Length: 201
Image 1 (tube, rainbow, N blue to C red):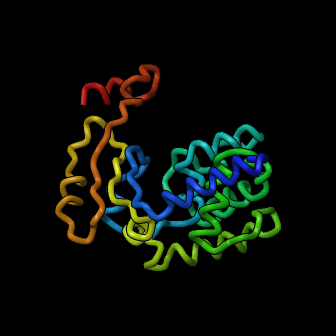
Image 2: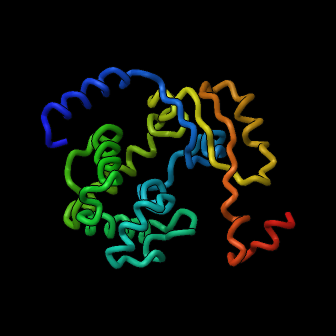
C-alpha cells in the first residue's frame, strides 16, 4: 500500500503469522507428485504449463497456448526452453498482478534469483532453476517440509479411486496430512470432448 500507516499494519500482521504452519484447504496438487517424490522436470513444466493464471496473462499478450505447451506433458528441452523464453520476453504482462508477486517470491525465496526475467537472461535463469530442481532440496516432499505445510487438500477427480491418497496416508516419509477434494469441472462442461465417457465412467 502507498499509505505508510497501512503498510505498517500489513507488516505487523505478516510478522504475527509468518512462522505459523500452512493449512492449505485448496491446492492444485496432484497427490501422485508427493507419493513418487520425483524431481520436477524443468522450469516450464513447473511454472508455466500447469498455471492457467500465467498462461492466460501470456495469451492476453498474443502468445499462443500451444507455444506454451498447455495441456501437454513435459516438453522436449528445446520447446520447454522456448516457452520459458516467451515468459521472460513477456514479463511486462505480469506487472501489477498477484502472479508477478508470486513469481518474484518464488524466484527469490526458493531459487535465490533476484534478477528480473528478460529476453537477455532467460536461458541463464532456466539453467539455474533446472539445476536446483535436480537437487534433493527441491523435490516435492522436501519442499513440503520446507514450507511447513501441515495440512493440504488436493484437487481430485470425483471418480478417482483415492489409491494414491491411501498410499500417502501410509507413507512414513510424508508428515503432512493430505486429503482429497473433488473438482467436478469436466463433468459440468457438456460440450467438452470426452464428456459422455467421463459421465459414464
